[in-house]
Structure formats: structure tokens, C-alpha cells
Length: 417
Image 1 (tube, one colour):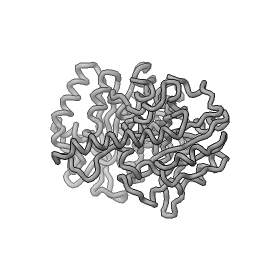
Image 2 (image 1 turned 180 degrees about the horizontal axis):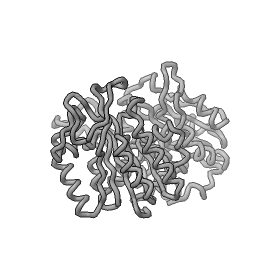
Image 3 (image 1 turned 30 degrees about the vertical axis):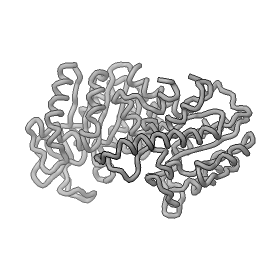
Image 4 (image 1 turned 135 degrees about the horizontal axis):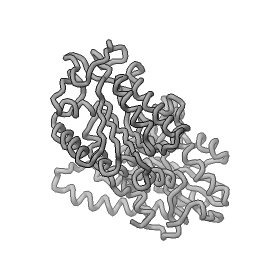
């Protein structure tokens, strides 16, 4: 695989898949430019080498139809300001050959939203999966996807994937396009390289004790992650809403707390597997319960096994945090994905904020910490701690699939795996 840092882009046209799926307000203004800033080192390196740049991305979920509210044309000026060069805009990503051919060294062309074309995601349109015609439609769409990828590839000499947030999808622009470039002309961008190295650091090169903190609302969304981690970690902290399924499975009274009855057998299985493998599985012992799912709910600290009827666990209690602090501060490698409370409510964000502080303190003491997932990232940002952890992942879904042990199509297409 070609190393991006070593490649000289002078005289080369590079088409770069980025993740510019940035949030916009009603005026079409960017409210958080983190993703654009993350791609700048890759984009600037190409321009500084004397190459020309074709930038492609998706925005939102237009489902294969043109939607002006999701047009990347809205962010062209913001991208130009960050790159400090003018940015041309191609209003149709599949009909940009002429504009791409006209690019001179140092010039930039931004393509329209890739997902305005159903070929990008490669999903049959208007055919239900249960319909007998689905298999035929799927085969036809695969052919159309390959042609779409071939069209995008025809714009450039080199392909660079710097969009980790979509690396777990085999889309035209994230994986299929790589088939149209030889091994010496396709590579991972700087952001992608960082992400891959960060995940390898926790999954393949972890120093022990290794602690994973898995939070969030549902066991179902992270069961595969938890199972894969049991073979790697010394400590597994499970918090947030998903923890109540484990508590109820043990006979606990959880009041009106969020849980998944059908996954209680799986929860018990995870606990048994952890014991067998010698993993310290740490669940909450105390919760801050609310009498309604609102920020201004009445609150009380209660034993996790004895939550009153009409109340639901909404944040980690101090006794839980005390236990978790000891575990986190004694760790050499830390992976954190998911909040330990209803983080969007200020009155129930304390526990998640404390976890962020513990992870930052452990990092200061020499631990390697990887934080990923929207609310976990929001927590370290909210408390000004993002620069005090080792790495903050830009791709929640991609990171989770990598932790599950899955091969990411966007990475495999470059590495030839």
C-alpha cells in the first residue's frame, strides 16, 4: 500500500473522498466544521505538492434524489476559506468530466452530493427486499454502481480515501472506485491513517490493563462489540441505558428504566463469558433516577437493583462513578464508546462528564485512550478535554464495526484485502 505522506502529487489530479456531512442551520450555514478541519491536512498536502484536487462527499440522506437543502454547494465557500484557495463547484457529480479535465495544479473542484445518485449506496430503488424481483434489481444496481464509480474514477489519476466515517460502507465512492486505480495510485489519507492506527493501538497493540467503557441506550446496538472485546480487555464497564437489561436479567427491580427483555439471556451469557475469561465486568451499582424522561424531572439516587415504580435510571450515581474511577485510573489502554447517562439532559449529564475527566486523567498519567461515538465525543468536547485524550475518532459506526472485528470495505479496498 502506498503511503500518502511519501507520494508526490505534482502534476497529478487527485480525487479525494472526504466526510463533509456537516450540520447546517436553516440558512444553510455550517454549525460545526470539525469534519472539514479534519480533512485539511490531506487536502493541503496535495495542493502544496502541485497537484489538483477533486473533492467528493455525501451530505445527509437524500435517498437517491436531488434535495437542494442537502447540496454541497452550500459549503463551497466555507471549504475555500479553510483551504485559502477558490473552490469550483460541479452541480452534477456524474457529469463533471469537463470541469475535472480543466483543472490546473493548485485548483480545487467540489462535486455535488454523491447520494443524489442511488448508485452511490448501491441500493435498489422502489423494490422491497421481500419482492421476488429484488435479486434482479440488486444485480442491476450493482452494475450501475460500478459504472458510477468508473465515472468518478475517470476524473483523476489518483484516489485518496480520507472518510473514515463511511469506511464501513461499500459505496461507489468509498470502495468500488478503488478497483479502477492500480495499487500505486490509491491510498488512505492522513485522517484515515490516524483512525486505522488508533484502532490498531487498542485492538492489536494494547498495553494492559485494558479497559473498555461501553455505554448508550441499547444492548442490541453493541452486543457484537461487547462480545469481541471480551477476548481483549481486562475490564469492561457497561453503563447507560443498556446496563438495565443486565440488572433485570439478574432479578433486579428497575422501575420504568429502558431495557430489552429479549436480550436478557444474552446479557447473562455475556456475564458468564466475562467470568470464564477472567474479565472484570463492572455494572452500575447506583443510579440517579428521574420520575419522568425530562431534564426537569425530580431526581433521587437509588440502588440499581431497587428502582421504584414510576422512576427510571437516567445517570450514573456517585457510588458507580467511584468504582469506575478506580478502574479507569489503573488502566494503560482505554476505549470509550457511549454515555453513561441521558447526556442530552443537562441535569443527567454529570456521570458522562465525570467519565470524560477520568479518561483524561488516566491519559495524563500515561494511558492510551481512544474515544469514539457521538455522545462520548460531545462529552470530551463539552468539558474541553478533547485535547487531553489520545485520540478522538471521527467515525462512530465505522469504529464500532472495526471493534466488532469486521473488515471495513473502505480500508480493504485500498489495502487489497
